[in-house]
Image (tube, rainbow, N blue to C red):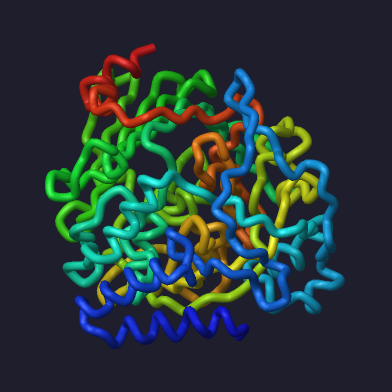
Length: 450
């Protein structure tokens, strides 16, 4: 391990052995020392300089009338390309799933570009992270976050559950909306548009007028209104996620036009298959993982440098015909970079069930969001691998994963979800509590009628 990684691993170990109060104090001190960014990432460059130091400057960004953001790195050329033929030379910087994709699909290629640590957030978010370092804590065996608000709760995580909560509570905006497509591809190369939906996301956890002591516990509300294909037009779904997975894993509602009513749905959670993904992804596969952690024991394995999809504004600007290839996204459309990631491993807890017996998540250190994920089945076979593609919004400022793919390594089928290639970009708005009236079962019924 490189020196900077060893430094972080030593810090995590020290915090893990300290009392809660000492750990919080040390976490706060590490943020103030300058060794870490205000978001908890290593500020310095990698030893060989291939990963640059973080400078904290938002990337200048132009935004079109359709909310599509420019690609600030469009003129850059790849530093190297990795295929099945030379994957062994780069195995140390590739995940199991990435290596499996390279082996399965001869056309698969990873073009590695210069690394840019472009993730920058607003000062108010950084202030909240600093406060969370002193006040946030886990309860109920890691299933509940207490005392956190307005930023990632654990900038220096001591265990896997803390790091996974960082992924879930990472900044994705306050009120975010976009229209996106979902495509399912077969191993033979057939492509089907299974879903087009208007997606509206509200994050009460990031309401700048709120306070942790008055926080309701709802960290996100999502509303999905389906407009295509015609057979499904008018259907709608709504979910609420909580920071207390012990007593409230998730709430969900569905509106079906033929029934003209909204039903409370317990099935929009865990490993329930997403019908629009043809069984290739489940509801807890959104953003590579979302939802309650109560079915897993989560272990923090440490940090490493790997190649990940990153700064993919160019991907989102291309037409879908130029993006979807056979077996994977068109390698010409996807930008990969070398970054440091936290590695988490989630294994089924005793007495619990999920079709994913083991998951390994790779969290980008600068956003805390999962950018790659591998899944093993109950027989111990590597079953699926997921990739999430980061949208850089320097105007916001933010950087967050948006579109994602899941590849079934056994069947060869795959799904490309939250694709905005044909539908416009992402709209970010300041949080307004009045907007929450759109995220109710009554509003779902009135909006879903066709």
